Image 1 (spheres, rainbow, N blue to C red):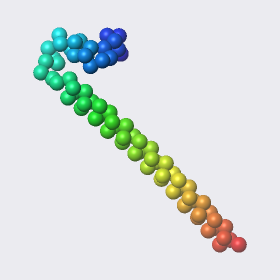
Image 2 (image 1 turned 120 degrees about the vertical axis):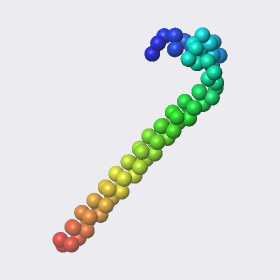
Image 3 (image 1 turned 30 degrees about the horizontal axis):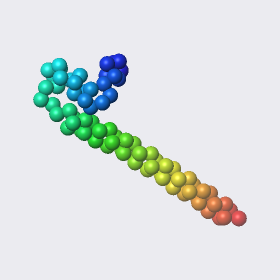
Image 4 (image 1 turned 60 degrees about the vertical axis):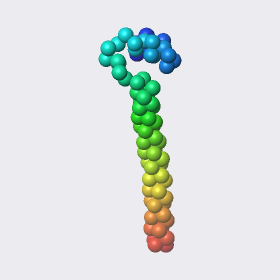
Length: 77
């Protein structure tokens, strides 16, 4: 990361830093920041859902394997 970007941590500092850049003219930085935050939240939410689903699938698979082993043991006796 560039040192200058790290120093500009407040919204006011970002606006002051961006004022000289022609590529950012006409862009509402508040709207842009909201869009970035929403995208990050969406990705984090998706990652959390994936983790929960993976955990539940593993739990269910382990339970089914244990039940099948118990059933095979019971049939063998």
